[in-house]
Image (tube, rainbow, N blue to C red; front, side, top):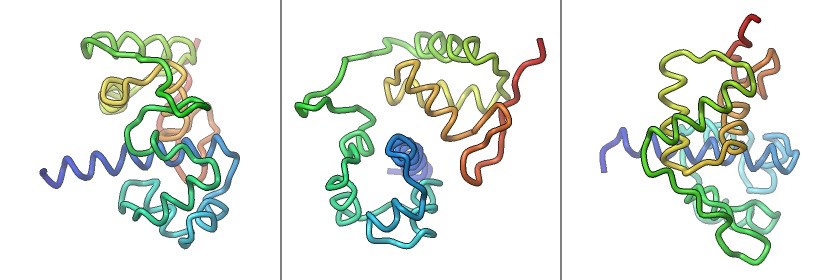
Length: 158
């Protein structure tokens, strides 16, 4: 596996980790304590700079974090079964889902943001709701960036 591939996987993991932390209404510091690491390590995991070990994941799972989702990008329901089977047959279908979210939220993307978001949607087989969470978690928008993530998306002018 190439270094670029590993970095991409770490970045997707980081995005999912931040989604789970946000879903559970935890700060980075609180999530770090649960995982038995320092806040700096938590930040590095979320930014895709470092990958956590199995002990960290085990600690998070005990708190209710969907570790299956962190690793695979697919959520489990309360019975431990995979939720809906959403399969984009092509990148075009993923693009349509991203455009639907873009229009719903009245956002404009840079070319790189659009490419990254389509890549996420296609690779993770993300629903439109998942795409919206991704955009909030990775880019922040509408003047309210999350944590220390700079706002990269701007609301379109009417």
